[in-house]
Image (cartoon, rainbow, N blue to C red; front, side, top):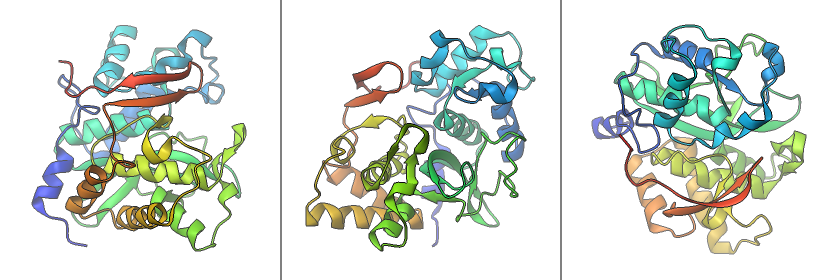
Amino acid sequence: MTVSADELDFYRTQSVFSDPCSTVPAGTARELAALVRNVLIHREEGALFGFTLPEDRRDEAETRYAADILGVLRARSPRPLTGARAPEERFAGTCRDFALLLCTLLRASGIPARVRCGFAAYFAPGAFEDHWVTEYWDGGRGWRLADPQLPGVYDTGFDPLDVPRDQFLVAGEAWRRIRREEADPGTFGVQVIGLSGAWFVRSDVVRDLAALCRVEVLPWDAWGLTDQPELVLSKEELTLLDTVAEAEVRGGPLTGLLELHERNAGLRTPAEITSHTTYGGVRKVSLRSSPRV
């Protein structure tokens, strides 16, 4: 698929969520992914680094905006972002925060980038775990997937800056496989807490569309077609989700993605969403309409 100059410019431009509101280091995709790994730690992976995250820091992953994540990092340590940090000096987030911060840095370096929501096959055998990565533009090869979260303890057998498409399925591809009865819905989700199924994939289809439109929400944010696990979908809703899934697998065109997001109430991200937080319960959150400088 041909990608227009306007589309690449769209993904070079910061969103409300990715805007750092300050000067950040520039570099190549590989350099910036290494930087992200050095300043973030997944809140559930402290043991991999010999670190126990204090209970009162588990809600850091609710920080949501890149500028605020950077603010936490600067308040925690005077070290430059390009320097190595001990685990306790890092921001404790989730895969989405790794993906968002890399997206921020790539955009600031003039590299088109976007956050993708989907499922990874490389964390647990036989399972597709809910996961978020960064997709960035390589002029020679097109869109490539990068997983900046992967530390050396994960032996994936592939380059984290070039994740194979069969190892990370964008949400639309997972939906297509389920709809074609090519995959078991129960293998998609967060297995450790028992959340899985077609409803979970459906929610990620909506979130991935939002991210492709530069609305990089949190993994547990819900609205419209994402906010009803028990929802029985109508024929029209199934057809709509099938259309979205195909667009996500193609990765565009941008005009079609924006139209799907804006013209369908069940897909469009409202000003206020429901956030089903892991440690803070369910809450209503008003999303910012512009960055806080």
